[in-house]
Amino acid sequence: MRTPPQPHDPEVSEPSTLDTVRLRRLNRWQAEGLREDLADLYVESSAASPGEEFHDRQKFLLRLADDVQLPGFDMLVAEARSLTGCAFGVPVSRDGSWWQGFHGPLPQNLEQLTASGHVFAILDTVVHPHQHSHGLARRLQERLLGDHEASLGVTLVEQADRSVRAAFTAWGWQEAGQIHRMPGPTAFQVLVLPLGERTSAHPDGLAHNDRTQRPE
Image (cartoon, rainbow, N blue to C red; front, side, top):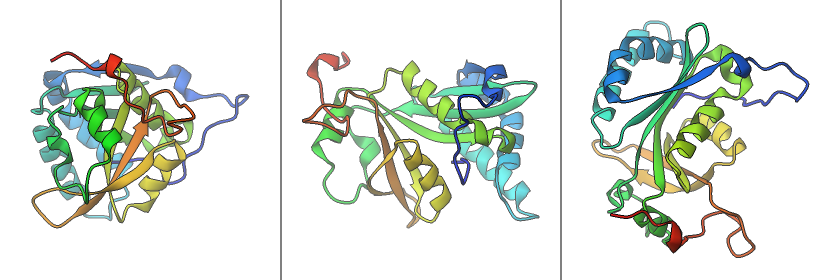
């Protein structure tokens, strides 16, 4: 997950380059066709040490090759004169398998929202450094979640990546616990972005609504 270490939203009077950025959805085949450009963008957005760029690029390509095969994969890219950002993810399966490895019991509201079919997992967000100060990462995420009519966005962030966690929490994402992903001992922080109506009973926006349950 690549996001700005110090998120900043321009003042209303400040001109924004977002006005010139076009968002476009890609299916898995289109994403595979753009894989080399996406990998270049990933390297440009990362803070890799000299000599590590090739290794990081290959790791990204391997992850992307696996992710595009997941059911429901969807990608949103941002383009101006060139590719400037992307966000991609998948709908969370209603059977709850996405939450395997969660530390402790899964909160009931998360379990109910998952069963209703309105949870979407953002697997990665990559934005060119020159676009960071204009909120492009957040725009990509919110548009992707909106396109899928999600009531809840979820993402995983490595525990040690404090700058990414700070960016997400500044945008309204909430820490919801920890999860282990196999293979390896790495623990990730689970972040959620509630998109439901905030009420006095559910000020966090995590209310479950049976009327919004998706059909089988």
